[in-house]
Amino acid sequence: MPSSIAIKNEPNATVLVGSSSLPPLSRRANVGSIPLTRSTTIAVAGGLVSQGLKFCVILYVARRFSVSEFGLLSFAIAVNAYMFVISNFGLNVFGSRAVAQSRVVSRALLAEICCLQAMLAGLGLGLALIILRFVPGVSHLELLLVALFGLSNVIQAGLFDWVFQGLHRQEVSVTLNILWQGTWLILTVAGINLRMGIAAVPAGLCVSALLAGTVGYLWIGKTATAGPRAGERAHLLHRSWRTLQSAAPLGWGTLLTTFIVWGDTIAVRLIRGQQAAGWYAAGNRAALAVAMLGTLYVQGAFPFLSQTSQENQLAFERCFARTYADLAMLFVPGALWAIYYAREIILLLFHRTDYLAATFVFRTFQVTMLFFVANTLLGTGVLVACGQDRAFRVVLAGTAGVFLLFCPLFTWRWGIEGTAAAVLGTQIASWLWFHCEAGKLMSTNSLSALRWPLTAGILSIVACRGFHLSLGAGFAVLASAQLTQVVLRHPTMQGADS
Image (cartoon, rainbow, N blue to C red):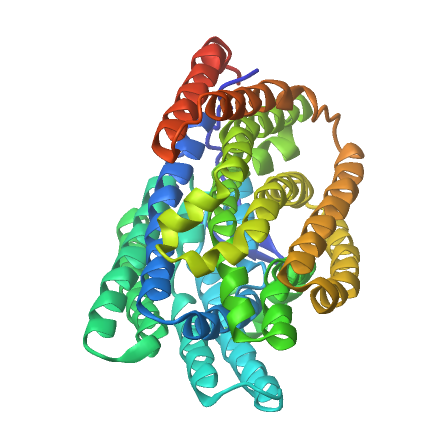
C-alpha cells in the first residue's frame, strides 16, 4: 500500500467559488512533495493534545460540580453544537477543499468565509435563544450558558485554521487548536476558582478563541502576501452570498451530521431530565472525543484525497485504502479493549461511583465511534473530496430521518440505554448508505483492512481476561498489540508512490 502521494505546485491556478474566480496570493504556498503519513500524523498528534485538553475541561467540571449541574453544561454544549454548525455551515471544509485543489488562497476567500461565519453565528445564537425561551424546564442559567457559547462562535469566525489545512500546513493548524484548547482549560480552572461558577466554562472559551484567532490571522500575514484581486469592485456581501450558495449542499450535510451526533443529549435532557443527561454525557463524551481524532486524521488526508480525486483515480483509491487501513489500526483494538474495561475507565475518569450508571452507554459508544469514524472517511474523504456534496447531503438527510424517528422513542421507552442503541443503529444505517454511494466512485474492500486490527483487539482482551489484569497492565497489553501492528505494517508503510 502506498505511503505517500506526491503533491507538486502548478502555475497560474485559481480558486473557483460559485461563479467567481478568486485570485491567488502573490507568493504561492510551497506544498512540494509532502507524504500522507506526515500530514495525518501531525493532524492526529495535534488533535490528541487539543482534544485531551478539551476533555480535561469536561473532566474538571464534572468533578467540581454535581451531576445535575454537569447535565446543565452538557445540554448547553449540545445546543452549541447546533449553533456552531450553523455558523460553520461546511464553509471550513469548502474553503480547505478549494485551497487544496487549486494550491492557492486569496484574501477575498478569507473575507467571504469570515463574514459568512460571523453572520451565521449570530443567526444561530438568535434562533437558539428564541426556541429555548419557549421550551418548558429550560432555566435562566442554561440560557446564559448557551448565549456565551454562541458568542464564542462569532469569535471563531476569525480562526483561519482551515487555510493552513488546505495548504498542507497541518503543524500550524494544530498549533492554533492547541493554543485555543489549552488557554480554555487554564481560563476555566481560573474562573471556577475565582467563584465565577459554571459560566466560567463558556466565558473562557470566548477569550481563548479570540487569542487563537488573533495569532492565526497574524500567522497568515507572515505566510503569504496578497496580490492584485480580480472582481475587487464586487461588494463583500454579494461575493459572500455566491460563496454561500456554492457551499450550501455541503453546509446542509454538516448541519445534519451535527443533528445526528448531538441530538441524543438534547433528547435525554428533555425527556429524562438533568441527571440522566449527566450520566449520558459521562458515557458518550470519551467516545466522541476519540472519534474527533478520526475526524482530524481524515482532515489531514483530505487535501491529498481532494487533489488525487481530480487528477488520478488510481492514486485516489490508494490514498483512500491507506487512510482506511490506518484508521482501522488506530481505533479498532482500542475500542474493543475499552468495552472490556468500561467500568474501570469510568471510575478512573470521574472518580465517582454514581457515574457507573453510564457503563452500558460507554460500551455502546465504543462501537458507535467506529462507525462514526468510517462514516467520516466515506462521507468527507470520498463524497466531499470528489465534489459529491449533494449525495453527501442526501445520505445524511436520510440518516437524520432514521435518528429522528427512533431516538426519542427509544429514550422514552428505555432511558439512556435506549438512546445509545438508537444512535448506534443510526450510524450503522449511515455506514451502509455511504458505502453504497462511495462504491459508485471507486472500488472499496473494507473487510480486508479490519482483519489484523480485530485480531489484535480480540487477543488483547483474551490476554487481559485470562490473566485477570488490572487497567494499567491491560493498557500495556493493548500498547504492545498496537506496536506489533505498526512493526508488521512498517515495510508496507515505507513504500513510496507518486
